[in-house]
Image (tube, rainbow, N blue to C red; front, side):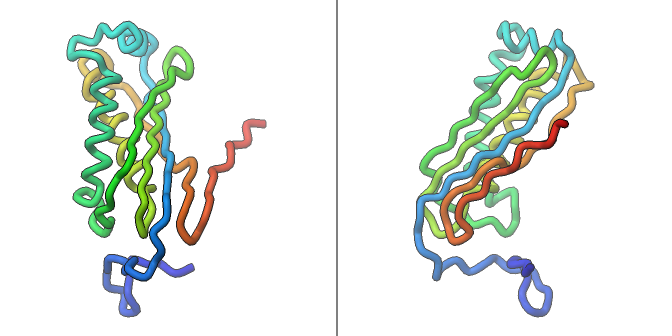
Length: 161
């Protein structure tokens, strides 16, 4: 397998995507923030002193996705057409963070989806750290991507048997 971010001599490079076709590309990434049950209840009840944690985390994720090329050195700046960040209470101690990104471009939006999800998770931590410094963030991973030459990718569900 070839690493595309290095040239023949091993020097880092930004991949030339000028010859690629423009296509609709999507990506979904997700991860969890695990915390004390009391902390998650404060989030549910919108009782965290800093404000509505999920709304602030949603905005942080959307804003971060737009900054991805500033954070990841060899990432192409691409026009994002859609970014969604959503949350799901998994149980008494786990919050799922999911981000969806979409573009019509020559390169994919996986990094933007991952950046959005992780920034939203970090924001949940930041807003709740005064009541629960023991929160755990992660793992975060790409769950699906569509479009482009490599086509459709969907992460296989973990074997829980």
